[in-house]
Length: 262
Length: 247
Image 1 (cartoon, rainbow over the protein chains, first blue to last red):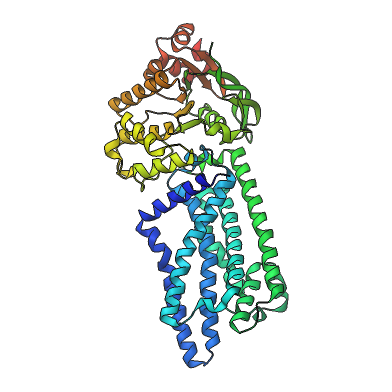
Image 2 (cartoon, helix red, strand yellow):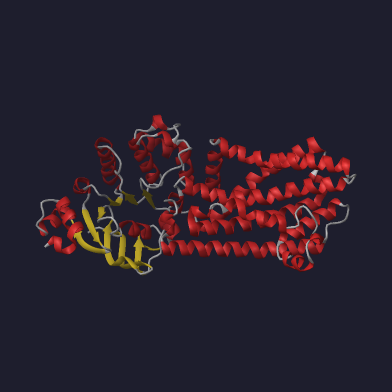
């Protein structure tokens, strides 16, 4: 694996971002709109309900949810960018390997969310006195687990786009939102009916957000939740890599790489 | 006798029930300029894509620079390059940014020096900071060729290198390609629908029709063998009437 080639792919994304107002605004426009909405809602809840924890839970959940959604989206959109610019063939006739290509997409996701989440955390602290770092050291495993799951979902979506082309591009913006109502993001797992609760535990998100709420409530980060989250992350990430490799192989057999950018 | 840059044996590619390439074999010697011709849908693009590892063959074996493809794809792709007017460089990036990225992807040593010398050779130094999307067709063709030569390839695969160019720009590109062959001994394997260009540029042509090779040799020999006026006459007869058109 060549880190030089991986960096080259990311350098191009940086060049593209630097030259596109739309790409730059994408880094902060929607995240900040979400933050303003939930921020003011949390201010209202803090004063009216007298439950300060509720406000912290909402803002914490928003920032972590955005981290997951944005990293998934960054991966899928970086691939779509290759299609939109009709450049995919130019990339795949270089010595870039499939692994380098996927790692580059994952790294690009990290770069983008580092900017977005830093901005959101700063604004949340300045305007709403919410400090995401009150999660302390627990923030590290929670964020890590979210990043890995975001990589897995982003890679899986990209694999579908590789097979079905731009007709599947809407998945890049929509699929992750399936997890929002069913990921115990803004409310506890206990809200769901018991049978659904068991089903939802096959995803890392409920474990991560339950862990976040526990820490914000002053409890230690529940280890079993963390173990489940990382175990599931590993399964989903390996599954996503295998799915991507399979779809790439299918695309080569069917000549889809040439047709993707038509 | 030149050594072979490309060896294709019994190559077949089917897409479902459609036979795109039907058991073709050919060789391209080192330093040759070979035109790969045929009507639309003959299988030219599919063959080039297979040679570049973009499409998996159904049957047959391929060696590029002595290495099996696609098994040794990475080693081969670092020594060859490809250009097509139908594959773009991102329009939002400047010429410099686009070429910088590809120089890194190919691991070019002393990138700035290499890019500077290619910019001078192709007379595009004044376009260096211009957005790629603002280039004229002729300028774009030259930048695409720089991209294709960035790793000093031993084989250049070109898909219609002068398509959409005015005669003057097309002539410039042809002259540059001939110069590349003479100065660097580069092997060029290309498709074209411009038969005058093919006659001027190629040392040999491989003619494909409905996935099969129907002619392989120097243009003049093929034209004489089939009793045609010129290569265009040969092409039209084959495209309109298949093999019967050649008799």
